[in-house]
Length: 144
Image (cartoon, rainbow, N blue to C red; front, side, top):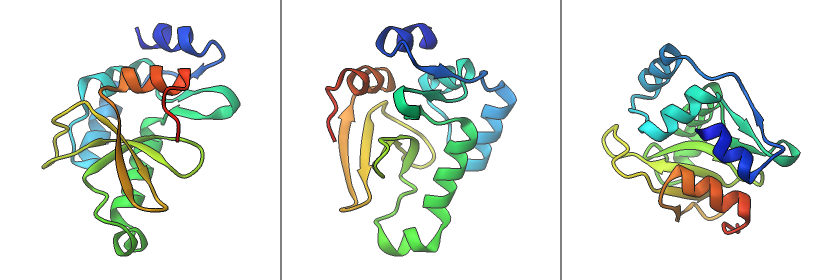
């Protein structure tokens, strides 16, 4: 489902082997957040999706864990920005801005996608779902 959808938008996209259910459970435990079903199903089909010029359309489960842990736990991020542990980062724009889902008490309650800008620490609504984020990002509707 996801690979076919993304290939229609980005024929040159590269896909990794899907993450196992065990790996996704480990990711949830490590981050103490339940993955939404669309992100879980996407990662199980392809554990990371790369677009043109190597752009990370969706990070691998390892990258999701590492990038979130860094932003949530590193004292430099905590002293510079508003709390980042209310965001689950899953991709970047290639320029420092990152795409994320909102977290409330360990649960992603809405499928909305936000972009976080590290220059001004803004968190801007970008798309209503990950599927729409991919479509809008790959068709140029999202401009950062």
